[in-house]
Amino acid sequence: MFQLTLSKLNAISSTNNYLKDLISLNKLESGNGVWTLNQTKGYGQNGAIWKGEPNKHLALSFYNKIDNLSLNLIYSINCASAMAVIDTLSIYQVPKLSVKWPNDILAGNKKICGILAENQINGQKIKSIIGIGINIYEKSFTKLPKATSVFLETNKSPLIKNFIEDLVKNINYYMSLCNDKSVNYLSKIFHKNLFSWKKKIKLNIKGIQVQAKIDKVEPNGLIKIEFEDGKMKHYQAKEIKIIY
Image 1 (cartoon, rainbow, N blue to C red):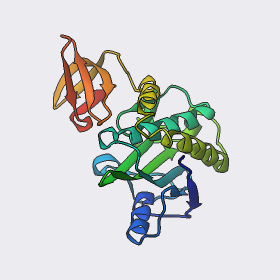
Image 2 (image 1 turned 180 degrees about the horizontal axis):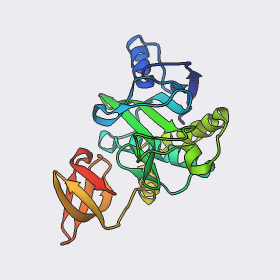
Image 3 (image 1 turned 180 degrees about the vertical axis):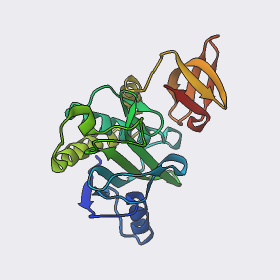
Image 4 (image 1 turned 90 degrees about the horizontal axis):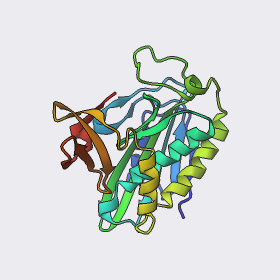
């Protein structure tokens, strides 16, 4: 069973890169992680910059070496990470939570968390560094109208110690489901929390706007789309933009 142990950093440019440096020096074990409220140069999917206001934004990264998960099921790591965050935010009564695949957690129509899983495959083993950035104490986002925080959604400021303890418990549980026997169960939970799942929505697919439904996210990370004529097609996440 996965067990996460975290260390606090007062400030760091990137928690993911910090762990990568430790791996290169053979100074990191599976289950080790770090957190900070002051990450200065965070990044997200496809190199997107993730900026957090000092002392108001939680950045957390951990290392997981997985040897009982088939390589074609690797995206269950993203599913597990997302569900750990959603269950934690639910404890603090953040409303209308969902996963916008592959790496955003939304409260309503606004982003409250970003997740970046950086995976390496070595033989049949998966080495993964998972970075989680959560807006907690921010009171405004003047240049980011589609961002929100725990405080803005609940008008409450959770104690960071309690918040991290709850997050660690949920990470331990969901990462323990990242194995071949538990993937189907994890997928069912994940899809119930998928943004606009099975609903007709506007999508921009390779530059063309259509109305369609997200049928499912495949274990390999591809998104299965159902079009109005009933046809099904698979796409990579970067090929699709949800219009909302």
